[in-house]
Length: 179
Image (cartoon, rainbow, N blue to C red; front, top):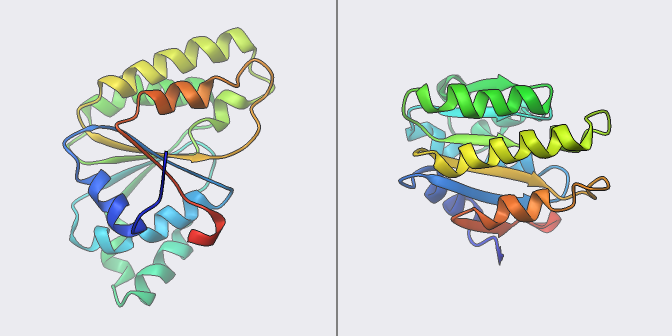
């Protein structure tokens, strides 16, 4: 895993990649920071699909980032289509069933391990859903950027992040000093 070089450029390059999974890991706040970092890319992009697995989408932060970069927030905000999932089964269903049929464009998975780490989700169900979800991500033809919040995994789920990262084409880490 490399340190995050030129963060905005790195993210832009991953969103423009031919396809496959890329991952950015970091402490709490990495999802909001990445959202703000893609504001300049959105100014010239078509659509980004933001799959919000942990209620991290912050429209005011994106609007402020656009303004700071002398971009019109009204031109940037509509370029993000948001899908919120509330549990591991919804996230899996969206990635397995709906993502492949969506029009072309990159997808961002915001804190996608959060629903798999839910203590109310039985371990066997979490493992089964995670494997199905990860396999679907590995087969996707669109660029997918997973924003992984670093946190302690619940018992029995400590291999989820390493298994996801092992299938990524590129992995970088953002430190709290990056944002």
